[in-house]
Structures are given as structure tokens and as C-alpha cells.
Length: 82
Image (cartoon, rainbow, N blue to C red; front, side, top):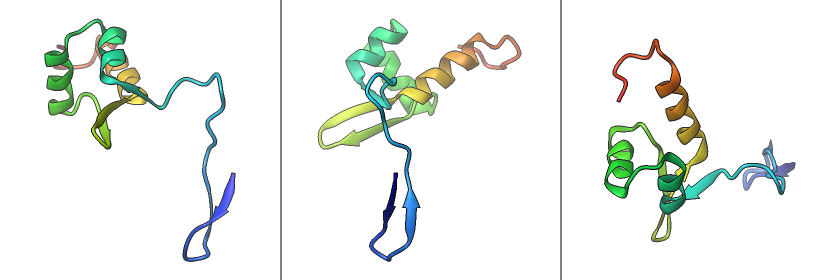
């Protein structure tokens, strides 16, 4: 999708389609996906292994950071496995 910014510059963004995986998930969903507790989840956020954003009072975990974490943990050549 293309749009014009406030400065009149044309830009484009990918649109999110129904049925696609979510961009972000709630903390409770991320905990369930990884089968970990809240303390461990926030530890991973604190160390930068998971990326979180805040929208209002809600904390959301980026799905791509969950996928990246799992990929790193599955890779036997990754040093510092947790």
C-alpha cells in the first residue's frame, strides 16, 4: 500500500492480511508459545533475546523475535545456548 507522508513523500508499507501470523503477541501468549513463566520471559526481554514494545499499558512481544530466539536455540553452532 502506498501513501504520502506529512512532508509529501511517497512511502509504502506491507499490509497485514487476515490469516497471516500476528506481528506481536501478548505476554501470556508468548509465555504459552515458549512454555516458560513470566519471570523467564521478562529476563529474555531484559537481555535482548526477545523484543517487546509497549502500547499504552500493554506489553507486546514481537513474533519475529520469538521466531529468532527459537532459531538461535535450535542452531547447534550458536554459542551461549541457554
